[in-house]
Every structure is written in structure tokens, then in C-alpha cells.
Image 1: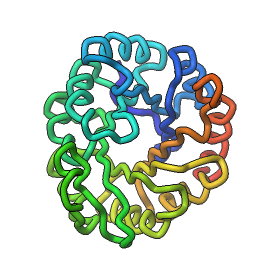
Image 2 (image 1 turned 90 degrees about the horizontal axis):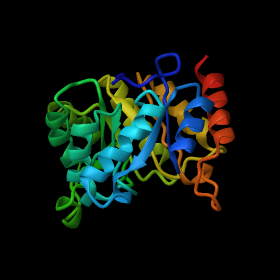
Image 3 (image 1 turned 60 degrees about the vertical axis):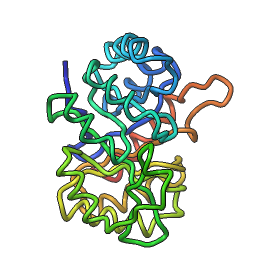
Image 4 (image 1 turned 90 degrees about the vertical axis):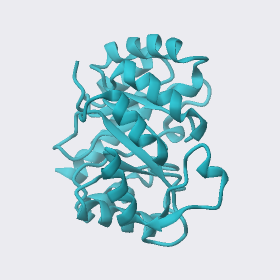
Length: 246
């Protein structure tokens, strides 16, 4: 079982949602394997059901599975940790305060474990109070450089900058990208990314020198009728990635 995601030119790996197991397989093929396929914990009643189903997903895509919270819901944090311990996916989405638990339960350092940190309106400052209890209190805002160092302390792999609102937080994103590059930490832009703004967002991270980037592209490439991610859009995203990285 492969625990390490496949990055195009060792720099970029897409992250998109699957609406079904066949959709997951189609996405993976369209991306030539340079993708992490998201399945949301929130869609399951309990850990055991989620583990059984996600193992079936993983088998179809060479374990390129991304265990998701579900719209960044902090109340899914413990469930995500428990699922990940059993499934051993390539990628786990977590809130800031859930990173240490997830890494400890995984029992290995290869799986990518991100942490949700949020924009504040102040470039260079991020909100880390994204956990189930902390998100209900006064915003915990700290320098992004400190947030990254704390994530490293906890065994985290990357910053999941969410919600970006497309290009609305691009100045803040640039500051986060520069801080990630400075500490050799990975970066995952998330929220409002589509086929029109993808290049701009990815270019910021590449130009900043971020070593590995995992852009999340969700609702903009999902067919509203079927609920499935469009494989042709995933192929387009890969083409755009190749154009920027090559």
C-alpha cells in the first residue's frame, strides 16, 4: 500500500471530491494519478461503516484517498482521526487542534496530515482556533510563521488555507505561501477555486517557492445534477498544472 501521494514534477497534486467509487476511479485516471480523491467522513453514520467503504475506494485508486471532514466541520475531527488510523490513507484533512491526535493514531510519518488555518483579513496573520471547542471562542489569531512551527511540532505536513473565497484572500495567501516556503512546509489552498482562477492561485504558491502544493477544487467542478466530479475538468486542471510547472 502506497502512503505517499503522487506529485506532478514533485510539486503539485490535485485534491478533488468523489461522488461515487466509479467517479473516484475516473478522476484518478483523468489526473494520471496526480490527485488525492476526497471522501467525507460526515457522510457516514459511524467509524466502522466509513472504514469499510473507504477501503473500497482506496483499492480502486492505489490508496490516493483523502479522508475529509465535510465542509471543514470541526465536529468531525475525532472521527477523521479514528478512520485514518484504520484506513491508512495518503492524505488526511484536519482542524488545527486535531493534527497531533491524527499523527499519533496513524503511527507513521508518510501520510500527509493538513490543518485548517483561516484568513483573518491581515496578511501574515492566521486564525488557528478551528477545532470543535476553540472555534466557538474568540478567534485565536497568530503569525503564520508561528502557526507553521506549531504544526511541525505536532507532526503536521501542510497548511490548509480555508476558506480562501477564490481570489478574495490572495494577498493573505501570498503571505502564507512565503512563510511555508521559508520553513519548507507544504500548502493546500482551499475554497472557491475554479477553472478560471486556478492558474493565478497556483502561480502564487509556485512563485513563492513552496516545495509541494495540494490545491483543493471542489464544488466548481461537480455536476450539480449527478453530484459527480467531472473527469474532463480534472483533466483540464492537470493540463493547467503541467503548463505552469513544466
